[in-house]
Length: 274
Image (tube, rainbow, N blue to C red; front, side, top):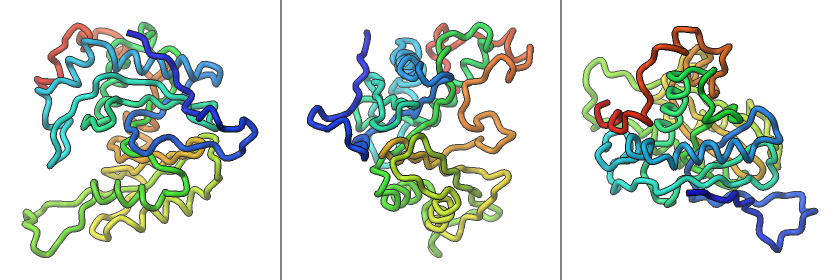
C-alpha cells in the first residue's frame, strides 16, 4: 500500500503569501526531520511505511494493547494508516499523521519503539530510516498564534491539579518537569526563554521544575505556522530519547549494534507481552 505526499496547501493560496497556513488542529502523529534537507519527503515516507507495516501494526496497534494506548474515559481507537504531509512554510520538516484523526494511540510510545527497534538492529544494518534524523511525537497541533490554548489542553491532560480531597498515598511524589522549545522555519519567531517560562507558569504549582533531570519534558515545536506539543519521558541530555534522534553508527556501541533480540517485524506479539 502506498500513500502520496499531500503538501497541505490550499490550491487558491497565492505562492507569494508570507504567512503559511497551519496544519489542521485535529492531527496527531510525528514531526520528522531528515539528515539532508532535500530528503525530507523521503524521510516522511520512511516513517509512514514503518507505521503502515503489517507486523508493526500487529505489535503496536492491536486492540489487545490497552494500558499504554488508551486515554482514560475514551474508547480505544487504533490507527488505520499513517500519512506523510508536507508542512506549509517549513521545507526542512514533514508531518506524519496517524489516521483516523480520533485514534487513541500513544505517539510517544510508538516513537520510542521505532528508535529502540533501530538500535536493536544496529545503525550499520538499519536501512528502514536511512533519511530520517529525528522522530518527534506530537499529541496536539494548533496555529502558532493559539499557543496558549494548546498548552492549556496539554497541561490539563498531563498535569492535573491536586485537590485537598484527593487520596494521595504517603510518600507519593509528583513528577518534575521542564519545558523545551524549538523552531523549524517558524512563521513567527518567538523567544525561547519567554515561551518556556510562559508554558511552565501554566503548570499547577504542585509540580516542581527540574531543568537538569526532569521526570517529564513538555515539548513545544513550531514548524511553519503550526505549533505542536507533547509530553515525553527520557528527554534529558544524558537519556536515550534526548531529541528523539534516530541513532547513527557512532552513537551505538558494538554491543548495542549486534547480538540483539529479533525485531517486532519477526515477533508481532511483542508488545502484548510487555
